[in-house]
Length: 350
Image (cartoon, rainbow, N blue to C red; front, side):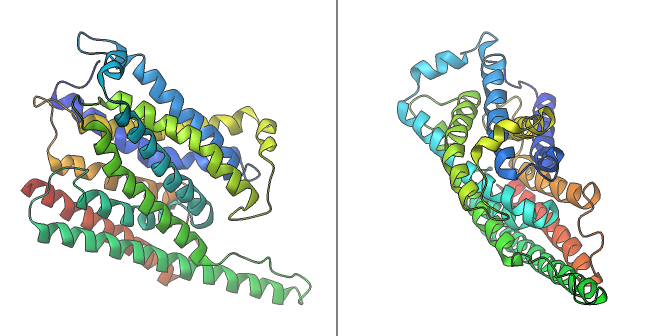
C-alpha cells in the first residue's frame, strides 16, 4: 500500500484534499439549469465510489507494505460496518448541503454548514490534538459566528430579490405576478442540519480506524463511499418525491441525461472523494511524514473558504446584493478565516 513517506508528499496530499473539497460543489451547475441536483447526486455517488475503488486497487495494492486486500482480511467486520455507517452519515449531511447550495449558493451554504460541522470535529479530536481548551472554544465561537453572519447575509439578499420582483411586477402594471420564492430559512436549515451530520461523521471515521488491527485509509475511504453510494438511493428517492424546490420528479429522468450532465456529477463525486482520501491519509501518516495538528486541522476550513470564494468569484453570488448583504457575507468569510486560524493555533498547542 503506497502512502506518503515524506513531509513534502504529505503536504501535496493535503493540498489535493483542499482542492478536492473546495471545488467539488462547482460542478453542481455544470449540468445546466434543467438538471436537478437530485439527479446530479446519483452520478456524484458513482464518481465518489469509482475514485476510491481506483485508489484501493492501484495505490492500495502496490508497494512492499500490506495491501488493500491484506488489510481487509485482518480487520474486524465491525470496523467495516462503522466505516459504511460513517459514509451514510456524511452522505446525508452532504446531500442536504447540496440542496442548500442550490437554494443559497456556495458562498453562504458552506460557512453555515461547516461552521457547525467543524466544531463537532474539533471537540471530538477527529482533526488532531488541540491544546488550550480556551483557545479551542474561541475558535468554535468564531466559526459559529461566521455561520450566523452567512445566514443573515443570505436573508438580506433574499429580501432584496423579493423587493426587486415586486417592483418589477408593479412596473408591469400588476400584470406580471412575481414567482413565489421559498423562505430563506429553508436553505439555512438544510445547510445547518447537513453540517451537523457532516460533523458527526468525523468521529465515526476515527472509530473505524481503531481496532486490534488498524484499518488503513484506503479501505476506510472505499467502505465510506460504498455506504455513501448505497444510501444515496434511499435519500434521493425521498428528495425526488418531496423536493426542497420545484415539483416532484421521477428518478427515471436520470436516464435521459446527457453525457455532460452525467459527467458533471461523476467529476464532482470524484473530487469530493479526493478530499476524503486526503483527510484519512494525513491522519494515518508515519512519523517521517506526519503533519502537525495545525495543518491537519486547517484542511477542512481552507477547503470551505475555497468553495465560498469560488461561489463569489466564479458563480457571481451576491454580485447584485445590497451593501448590507455584501458586507455581511464578506464579514462571515473573514470571521471564518479567523476561526480557522485560531483552531490552527490550538493545534500548535496540542
